[in-house]
Length: 519
Image (cartoon, rainbow, N blue to C red):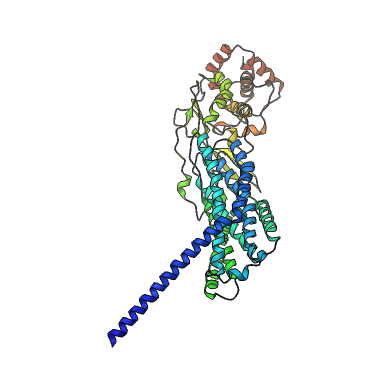
């Protein structure tokens, strides 16, 4: 009797397990079938070409016009992709969310084997798949062309991950808006509001410590823009990107959970799961916002978040510089190899004047920029000190495209280097600085004129940036005696001027030469 009962119980258990397995299998097939139907009829499929075209017109062409530096184009891609995809994705998802109410099919789909929340999750997944497919096309085009043009470095994936995480978040927000407010006006209103909220929120960023930096539109210190000097001499700091990915994931979970909580009073267990998911999503997004608020501008131009920062990011990257074969070699970071001919051409007149002189630099090398947050939104940029072993005379410089501002043409680049770095190199050789003697100012000005600088030209305030080894240019003096000595020294034959400098440059640098002693 006992054996018979045990056998019956075992058989019942087996039948129950088999039934559950069959139900799970059937549910999986239903879900896969529903996903396939959604992929075929999803509104995002028809809006996708417009999103890709918008990306090409506004972001791709802009990125390709910038220097082929990975960090510049990656930052441009992240910001541009987020702006280009938010309106189409939110709008398409909102249209899909209002579909049942607009077509009056709520009662019809409510009798299906899948609960409402599961059906909407499948809809969100299909919308996200199509949006991510278009995004990956844009990513491949931008990164592929940059890989072809860049002279050094490799893809920066964190900006791409941030933008990719934002796409499912946009789909979830749009679907939630369409589901919770099923009106024919929901889609256009949600798309426009999402765009303006994202774009205008950046106006609230003040300085490098701002909670609003968690927005996926932000790629670094908002005040510096797409700075070519970032992540070239030092690794890319992913602290802000990690916080943004956490924020995007939290928004996605919270929006999808809000849809599950709006499904009426039935299915209590799914509603409890949705409530827990909503709590987790809000906590994720809130944690990301709090982390972004602790960020600060680091010395290398990136946002450093103490809780996420890896000290390895503070170590300089190893690279072999590209150098010219001139009398005084000019060496640049390999990422800037395309700038070498223009830099050499701009410094050629200066090199011609000082090559072979005592105290002339043995090498002029590009160095990293050093950043510091100033009052409000101002950012101060100086140059990193270049290690100079005993007996060597290495000179550091910043290129114009390491500084803030739009990219320059070749002619503008050469003119900027000639007007800023050239006088700084001459000031280093003569030993002239802000407290230079009258004789040093006269010799410095004469050499500038000989190198092609117009007579009487004075250094502008912008020339104080990018000086070699921190050497500041001397303040130009309009004293008649200085001008007379300048003209007298500049009128000497080149051979006579060089011979005098060889004999007297040490005394001139020490401040022992007076105006009257100049030939």
